[in-house]
Amino acid sequence: MSEQPPTPAPKPAGAPEPEPIRWFGTSWVHRDNGYWLRRVAVPVGALATAAAAAFVLRLGVEGIALSAEGGFLNGLLVAAIAICSLMAALRTWKLLAEGKDRLDGWMAEDRSLGAVWIIGGVGTLLAYFVRSLTEAPGEAVQRAAYEQAVAQYERRQAGRGGRPGAKRKR
Image (tube, rainbow, N blue to C red; front, side, top):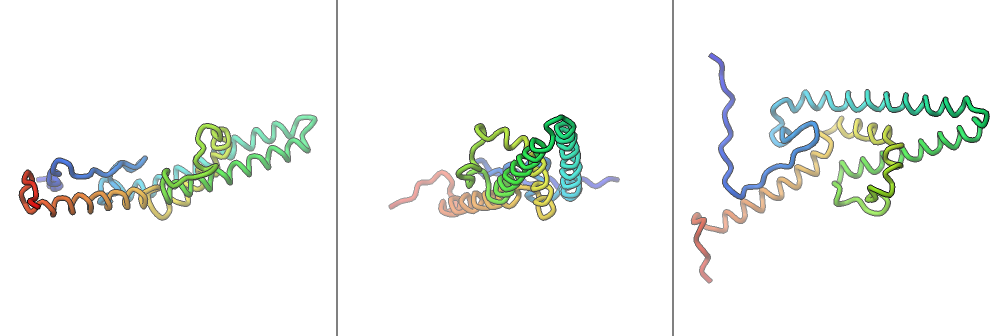
């Protein structure tokens, strides 16, 4: 006889729902449904993808180095890739640590700096890798928002005094 996991109690109408996180869904709330397997797989995948992206960039840099104008142009290209990777890593770290609404200045630019974020993809992946060693990337931001929403919901429910449809007398 196989045991069925206990089914969670249905949430009342109006109760806050957790926002899903990429690769983790809502398993981060109770750290169930393969959360720890994902916590291992995500950093490994991010590191492998960063290595593949770095290899592709290396092929591009070597292609420029083989040209007749390779010296100076090669140095400029390497510097541009390094700067873009650093900018993308800083933006990704802040995004995962504090949330998208806290991005300001050049970090908040999605469209005008889109090429920088693409060229700096290795930096993004490395920041994602490092962040995923401590938590599901973005989990701290999502958990804080979810716990705040639950606390507000519970305060509203407690203020009703057990009669959900009744209005308070003044």
